[in-house]
Image (cartoon, rainbow, N blue to C red; front, side, top):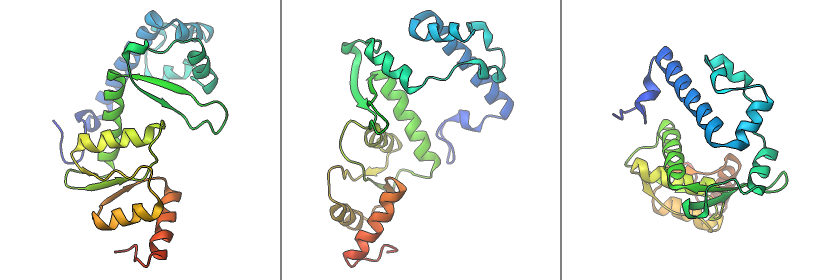
Length: 203
């Protein structure tokens, strides 16, 4: 049951219970990857890791990182979910090379929305807030994840994708938004834009 401070009851578990839960879930994930995902089984075997390797949380050190090159290979080999199971496509910005494209199933998207809602709830966003996400409409996941998270929480949403900075400042003012979701540098830019429009950002 959700309380005033926690999106999920697991967030309030005593340390020992939380550690035990994390270990059980990691062990189940390792077994799943070993049995169902040859791509990851290859990498686990190369690192000398088997499903029974993870006996305590410290054993996580033995599991290899999944890096960008791995994800690009995964995509090139067509190892994502079948097209009929994909409900959304997203991709990274590609600032360090080729963008990574990810097809999300309905289950993936539900889990990602719940994770994003937990993050925003932990930041203090609640039903009764008015939230303006200042991200561009596009394939990058932040915009979509935050929209779903705000809807899960039950706060009011002011969509602002694809607008100019001046238009976003006007929406912040007109809707009396209590939350601005954007990068820190862009929030500073909006502060300057608001001042240039003759508005006091503190108000």
